[in-house]
Length: 98
Image 1 (tube, rainbow, N blue to C red):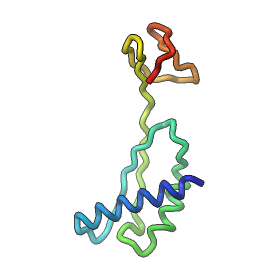
Image 2: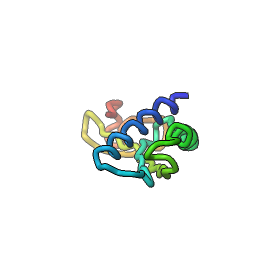
Image 3: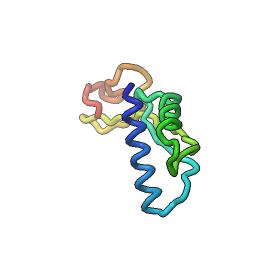
Image 4: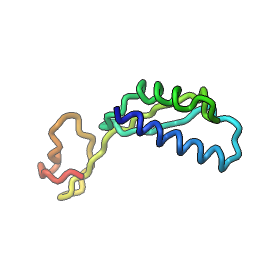
């Protein structure tokens, strides 16, 4: 259910930017979301379609891009993209991922 609050914030940001740019209409919105986020794209789109009615963003297409997680070892500085729940450093095996 947190998608509703997230979508309200997205729409607020869109409205502010549209107003600053004196835009009459917003056609698309590009959202970059980390892959570990629990955001459900379809829920965001559903709420956005509802909340944006009669606004400058009504009918805007949401484009979702997921970013891969990259962590860095706090001990040796090695960077990697974990593929499972084991976040120990593949280089030095420390448990200081950040």
